[in-house]
Amino acid sequence: MQKEKQDYMIRCVSNALNILESFTEDDAELGVTELGKRLNLHKNNVFRLLATLEMHGYIEQNKISGNYRLGIKPLKLGKAFQRHCGLTSQSKEILRDLVASCNETVSIGVFKGGKVIYIDVEETTKSVRVVSRLGAVLPAYCTSIGKVLLAYKSEKEISSFFQEIHFKPYTTKTVTDQEALLRQFDEIRRRGYAIDNEEFEESVKCIAAPVRDYTRNVVAGLSISGPAHRLPETRIQNELVSLVLNAGMELSKKLGYDIL
Image 1 (cartoon, rainbow, N blue to C red):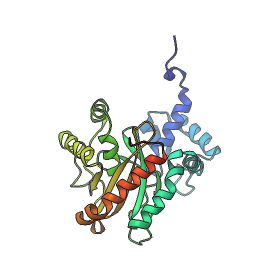
Image 2: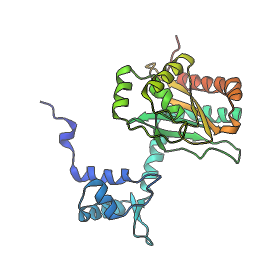
Image 3: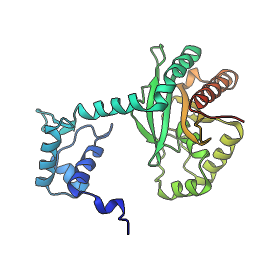
């Protein structure tokens, strides 16, 4: 009988990875006691794991506060992943051309673990811009890329997503009602794109198109983002919809998608 992968799990390695994943934009630095509480580990175990991670460059200690933060090694791994990801290697020129056309920030994101991971970003030249989301892990239900990725999933996958997700209202415009989101997904499939109308971040709007590969499945989302005052509905409909749809289709074709 073939063993489940979890049967081969090494507990200390799993604990070390859980420590790394505890560091986020909101929790850039954490102490031994806090990590122990979060992960239900004894302080001595946490300290030994941190010392090992620090030795290999994954963690560093703030000498002033005594707390820990991510080291340089995770960034190097992320860069290596980005360089070798076929999606990003194919998208570079398309993203640059799209920025040249609209002069707003454009991004590529994929769906992972119920969230969106932003794997490539090309920024506008304007001084007032959306903060780069490169490497960010954001909720899928209130971002344009996330919604376009969810909309093209199967009913079973969407149902599973709803069962596992904890909805949080990030702004007054965040949609947290399942039926309302399902109606949005129907509309996204009908028109071919999704809009984030200040649903994740106030004063920021985004529009995203699906990206398909040779399997004809949606594997990523491509978005245009900008300050809300630069993305009124008239500009979205008259300019940005066609730009993002064309860019999404161009990238899809590079990934082997055949429209016929």
